[in-house]
Amino acid sequence: MADNWTERLSDYVDDELTPGERAALDAHLASCRECAGTIADLRAVVDRARELPVRPPAADLWPGIEPRLTGGSQTRPLPFHAHTTRKFAFTLPQLVAAGLALMVMSGGGVWVLQHGGPATEMPPVAASDPIREPVVPAGIADPRYDEAIADLQQALEAGRAELDATTIRILEANLSAIDAAIEQSRRALAGDPANVYLNNHLADARQRKLALLRRATALVGGKT
Amino acid sequence: MLLAGLAIALTLAQPASRQAPQTDETVAVQRGARLSINNFAGEVLIRTWDKDSLRVVARHQPRTRVHIRPGSSGVTISSSGSMGAPGSVDYEITAPAWMPLRVEGTYNFVTIEGAQAEIYANTMRGDVIIKGGSGVVTAKSVEGEVQVQGARGKVNVSSVNEKVRITDATGDIIAESVNGDITMTGIDSKSVDASSVNGTIVYEGKLADGGHYNFGTHNGDVALGIPESTNATFVIRTYQGTVSTEFTLEGYNPQDARRGRRVTATLGKGSADVTLETFGGSIRLRKGSVARPRGR
Image (cartoon, rainbow over all chains, first blue to last red; front, side):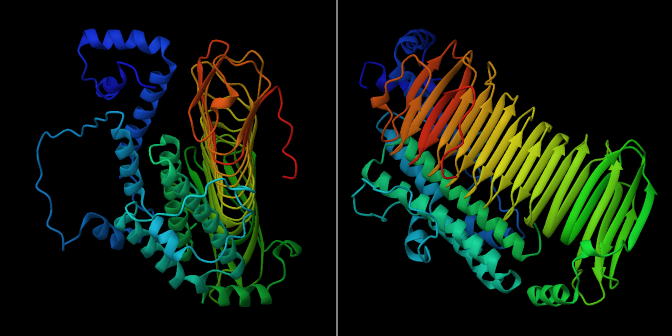
């Protein structure tokens, strides 16, 4: 994995190499599958980071949630800096931090542990789970995500009477299935925090839970 | 309250399909007009014809009233009940093939056949079956199965709890589920994105040169049945699953495909980008068709 170009891959992704360096690295990438794969992973991380904040809830719960996500009136707004560009620079070791940042942006681990509900009705993800590492929730939770999830859960709970028992059971089963996926991804990440696939997979699962909760609360509101 | 109202309404109501039509109206429509239907419970069946008019046949309780409202943008159809809850209405609608269609409901089964325009169908409990459609075709259900056949354009299909099936579709495809399997056959697309949590994903069809294909599931399998002449670069990732292939892939080492490690393998000229991911299931690459997964 380590070669002379390893530390420059992030600069390459950020287009910060000189033309000469870039041409040399292009030539290297043509023959080094490992570096080409790392480039693709870095781009995937950057793309996901750019995508993260662009999904407001579709339900009308958003007005209540948005101030909490953005800080609301209780939080002093950050000054606006004109012409600032959002840059993403990762050295390979920083990929670990980028992965953790993605986890923090997506959040939800603590909620899963605390409010994961009864055991899922879904079959176990694997008959024998080789992962034995203890669950370490500290440091990967995102309070904003947790609050959004908690708000949606609360809204869903408050509207249970508007849904019939079958619908509630199905929604809970599917939420439990997602929770199980989140939990398994998180446990795997605890033992392999730099794993890009696991970081992306966990982020996807958390987004999916958020999306399902939004849809469920929309059902409570009488919308499909 | 809503549930109580529904229970009362359904207790009092006979199944709408056993009743004689209470509503049978035909209204003229102008080209460009849209049809929007909101049906709380029941069935919506839409067929098409080559006339510029809309025929609405509805079966429902006498207490239920069906409202057919032509407007500037099209025709809206809804119902109301004298006891509060709108009750169950079964619609048989014949619409111009060119007419964009929007069907929403809660306990609603939707079937649309022969449409050649944009379709949006969304229900909580009930199957959605669409044959045809072009432009943007959206079909969603929480508890029901969703089938889309012969759609052209951007196809967006999801079911939370049941199967998703897309056949003979052309154009960009997005398919999602949580617990249901996703099956795509006869697909001609340069962009496919299918994802699930517990569902198996099956894709049978071409992988176009320059196309982008993403198949990802947590607990399910990913199975592709593709022509032997395919040119594709596969990025394969699984954490604790397995990978099998009937193809000889350049750069593929089965030992590498574990613990989420990225494995890149090339078939032919490698011109299509294909990502295959499953956390705990199996990834299978087959020549031609994919045998249906056992036990599913």
